[in-house]
Length: 190
Image (tube, rainbow, N blue to C red; front, side, top):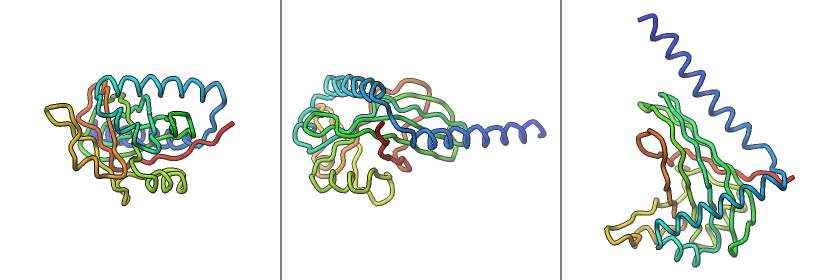
């Protein structure tokens, strides 16, 4: 019984440290070489998404803007945290840099990396995102995780949402990806 208390305390401290570290890093500015590297990785992730899900290309072409996170890292043991950096594209060109953080609590364990894309399908959705300098999923944001049918096409109910989210390329051992509670914030330049 005494072994469980130090383990639980250590778990809480590690989880809190991961979340706090991700939050602090989110406020850091990005230098020009970092922005160039992140843009190249986001463009490669976008090409990978279009190869895996051809219907995503059509959504990108009709969307006024989209945000690509080439690598989001998630880890948890009871307490969970995730962190990643991404690029907002407008007219297929970089228009801003953002980070994503999130925390969770519950029966969970593991670690994984994955890529995420957020397509703003209406000008209003993009304007709101830019005006608020980010968003928090699960806090009144009307979004849909892309639901692919057997034919590889995206369901029509998904296409009706102002924000469509794709998650792909999961690597590691973790049960699922929880989008609720994710917070996306703009990274300062320079």
